[in-house]
Image (cartoon, rainbow, N blue to C red; front, side):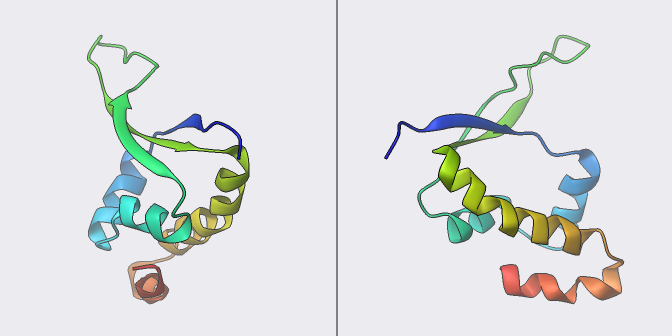
Amino acid sequence: MSDPERYYLMLTPDLERALAENEIDLNELVRRAAPNVRLEMGENFVSSADGQKELVTILLASAAVIAALTPSAAHCWASLSYSRKNVGSLSALR
């Protein structure tokens, strides 16, 4: 297996809110979909306009593992894009 690479996961405020409203833990979702991914919190490598540091989730994994995780993430994001009454399918992700 190749050395893990760092993938910075920066969610939009709308996506963070949708995850919270639907009680979805992103870390748990990643662990279930790709157990080989190591998660850590780290500093955003892009400074914000006001100079404050922002913490982001960093995925440590090989490119192949990230590629395998992509369908699960896409399914989650697509499910969150529907109205609240149609979000019942998210329970399968928990």
